[in-house]
Image 1 (cartoon, rainbow, N blue to C red):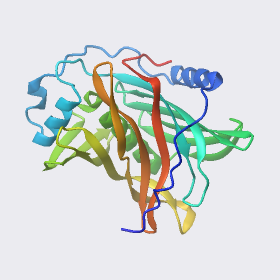
Image 2: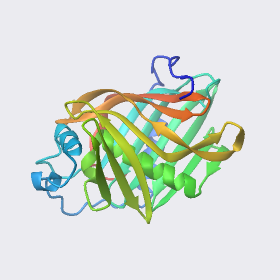
Image 3: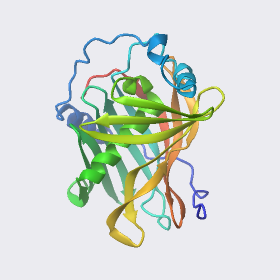
Image 4: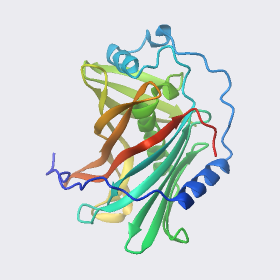
Length: 281
């Protein structure tokens, strides 16, 4: 493994809440055409866990899924810092996201301040298609990518969200759980004919400590115009209980590249920043 470049993360102060960003985010989620009716929601039972690996069962019990109806959506707000490259300065940011199990969808908005100019980034996965869009002042596009690599990356990020916040969203026939050892299990999610996989690490209680996958793509350090497959992980900073269920309250996102580990984002869940089973919009 190369030299780590993760130690210089500043405090995740983030940006002050923006009413206009929240309104824009809610409007675009409402306009995405996502289902608002989850249909029947049977509680998760011990029988639903019986055939899963022991480590995965321990994790799901720690996350308190048994006896509760399956979560069908959640909406969250984050504050934190972000940077484009290992030699780039950290920028304060604010982020909103909406994830839905019904149709499997993820809509993520993040705003960053560059001097006096705001950059708004949208990462989306809707109806099997991913897109990454970045616009200065929400007017001038600086990045707009939509291809199979983005589709895969956005789907595995949805899987990451579910594992950290609401695992009953992926407790169904579209998901495969595989034993590794007492401290980890593998999970695979299939949607629109595409399958992504990840390894989930847990402590002795079953609490998530890290999530690692190679189903994401990053700019090639040798050729920035090309996207290359690389290992991506999201070590968890801590947990808190919201609505009677543990959720990750902070962490970072790290690329593991030949030249070293590169942490590019650190987020903290805002106070009161996550709601479960909410309709889009």
